[in-house]
Image 1 (tube, rainbow, N blue to C red):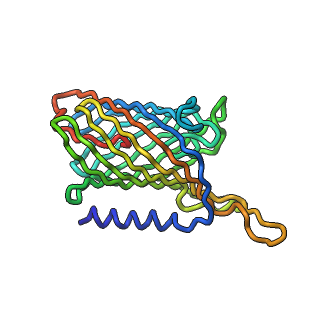
Image 2: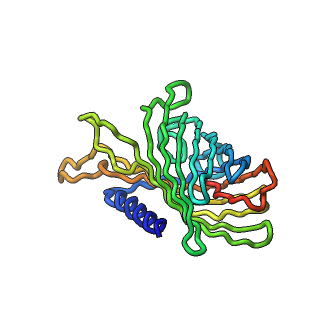
Image 3: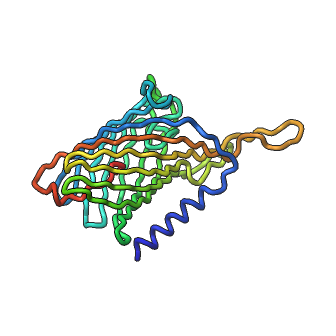
Length: 273
């Protein structure tokens, strides 16, 4: 009951904050494959490594960026866990990361996760804090360092097809907001939510050691630009509150290495972690 109430409250909060945009700009689709490795530890704990590439010029052309992710997660119980992450990435133009347009190429973070069930469905809630550090050298973007709060809600269901093969369809929505402790008087007022991502996927577990996850997402940057007005009518023609929407096509391939004999009992999380 507590899981249902928290999920409903969080969903209403996220959708309500992002519902008042004035404009929408659609970007071309990008492609983001990721190769992952997990080393299992006791009690469902694990170490994680992920290496992704990003192609902003369309599927089939050269990759122009990438990201290295490191992580550790510890389970206190069947429902609660937490951990630490570190993301390292090369930036190009508006920056790369879990959210397109997000600054920072050295990004440490911590998170807490709650896992529950509603009938046959698994329900997850993940709250994280990250600090994005940008370096001004070489190819890296020179942007201000910023702290970021992230909340993700997801629902999935496991469909076993055999003793080793299973499908896991899943839908997730994540919203992120910069932590603003003080704003200069001459700065534009920023949106409450800065980034959002709606993701649908089908995880395919081929064996306890190998699974792949094709996925599709709509990523949104919630921005505020300087308004531009028509000189004759005085009506606003561009700028202001704007949603920049980018379709993202992804493919995760994960390899799991077991450090003990608990392969069959281990609770495997989705590849989005």
